[in-house]
Image: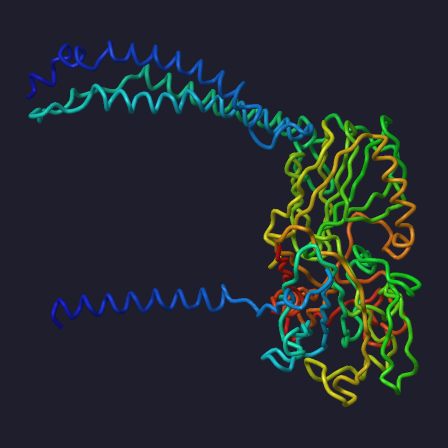
Length: 248
Length: 327
């Protein structure tokens, strides 16, 4: 092989390695879940955000991982992401549809609700409604306060930077926990889809006046199958943790 | 060539005793000025500040070490600059420099001086680690360096300016810090509040992985290991806020694991502590009994439904340790 041909080969090989490194960095390290933009649907200083928790994530290659989903404000469909954007200085009205079963908190302290507006008509901040699913009895109110004594908490939605912590109630009975949604996201009319037992948690908080990025997370060790429940969905963006971008 | 090399007079005229004397005088003057400036002007602004006994002790150490290093830095730079200015090779001069020979006196002086500096710093460092107690570092469950720390008169109550020490438990968990105050009913909170001028003992532990409690402005830094109680001491000097960070890579949100603590007046602290004890009493009831460590895999109690769903071990474990997905 002539000298110019060898030089050309070496340069091409070098560039290929560099391009491969850049691709890996951008695709695997730099990538993040899609961001659901709620800024365009905010009105009168308020915006409604809907999330969902599921015991399975059948739309991904990790079907046995628990996960959060966010409802797209544009399409109304639940998207597998945990990143969303809201305006600054706005009241965010959150609804969480909790389809997962109960797992005790590692630290019972996080069973306490903090950082939300007082909810009218609710006896205690930790009481939430449970959807009956018809065959499991009437709608009941469950206290998430003591997750060790009761089967009452499945996950939490916490933004430590804002002092916000809301435990997501779980179906409280053995029968309900054995009849959880088998799809992810849990949408549909059958017993193992959207009609499965689940909780409906509603709360409101206010975003700060200045913009910024706030991480949020679950405090339940819900990475089942990993050391002390810390790995898997607990350590992967798009599952049990995410970011809230506040746009000033 | 041999004749030139054996002629010390010519070498001395251009770079010998006269240059050495000048270098020595300039070095001494610059070192004195530099040490004074470094210690007195720059020193008070060196990290981590002087907000507590441990912080001010660490700052003092940094000032001393910086002052000691100053003559060395000045000597190197001065010699370097002098060589560039006066000992450059002249155009067309291809001769070697004058040969030098070993000097027993110089070597002995070098060994004695450097040994004295190193051994002196070892003694100095050891003393500074002892006083104040542990210099803000975690010392495990049985602190070795607790000079000046009052004996703990009570683990369940505390009053300011008494023969007791305020205990604060620091609990790391992915990814937040919480704090328990055993002498105020054992309430737990996300707010770290300390009284000014009172000795504090931090009992640092973790509920999951290894974290590191770093109260930067207080000069307190202690690993938070699951199942281990790591003790650090300090006494805040000033009221105000300080930053608490995790300084051990502990997972994906490690970088976001920080918050702010507050040092307030003693009366303000007492009001806050008593109010928090009352306000958080319902939460305190459901917490596990106060202990120096907590097993992250075991629940202190488990309800009937939880047991029927599989959490059946004594106390209740979260997951089967033989799970095939364990990495």
